[in-house]
Length: 443
Image (cartoon, rainbow, N blue to C red; front, side, top):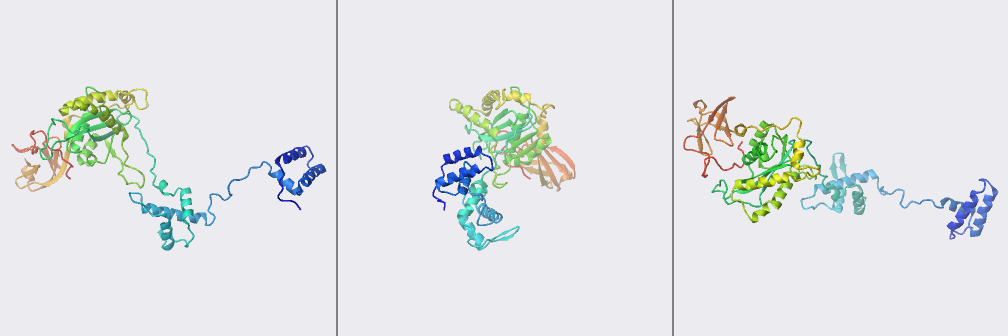
């Protein structure tokens, strides 16, 4: 009887294999060599043959069924894990709290869950917390992976002026000593930085404006200046698209009308939380970067000398922005403004219209009933219209940048009309050409 405690050394087996390699396959000498080693170690010839076969063969370090559940069918366990992961996601709040695995298993076993495929309720005691947590992690149904945001999709326009990124940011200076105008009822206006950045080249144009919050009027004035020709920079033209956030400017009907008349497509990012776990309201980095540069490299010098007027602040800012545009492009071996010039489309630059034409685009519609004396009141100013319109419900089109009023009735346009003598739409302001900014267009 063979002794199972004896193990044949590897060097003995190697020497035996060398000797056997020089013998014919069916030689009796082979059996004698194997029998001699078997007798030497007190084992059977079959044990020697098995030892020769297993010599220097790789051995598996894991079970053959590794990665597959053994106590339950893989299809059923995957279905239960999907439901438990869905319960955790459905019960999550903004602080990250959600249903635990143990509690989700209890609800699933005691009450079950109604799914589009039917009612699912596993037998009690079938699911274990440690098993479910393990397979949730292996199948990527765990909470960290389920709530992980998708990677950001970066984009870049192929040509200059194909896309402008527009944004507004409060200046670190906050206020200036001599604002162009102010409303006594609202205090001192805030100094804001208005900026557009060409998506392809990174060329920027910025202006200071003292306003009471974000409004369409100030944004349109700034965009007109950005699109118009300028003496100290080549940056100009009507862009193909403007990308901005979901603020008051994008929601303004006047802004949308002007962009439509200019042939400019405007897009906003999706609001936060509108696409599941995916982060949608990401910062517009190409327009945020110039803001940070201006505030760190330019506005910090205001500690030594502050501008007194808005015009003086814009003059200093314009000199800095021109130097900023002369800096190297983010990846090309030339400056930003050179990249803007080199990548203009074959059709060239779409020139901006005149200010008078632009003002005609910025007219806000409002439905109103004309009084019996053929007068209409807007912001405390009275406009006398044609007598045929007395008592009729009409559509008013009043200019955002001027005092002219047009009236539309039965597909016919009347006007322009101006305020009656001695009246102005500007209330509480010293200059007749300036008026408080409207927070939102009336519909």
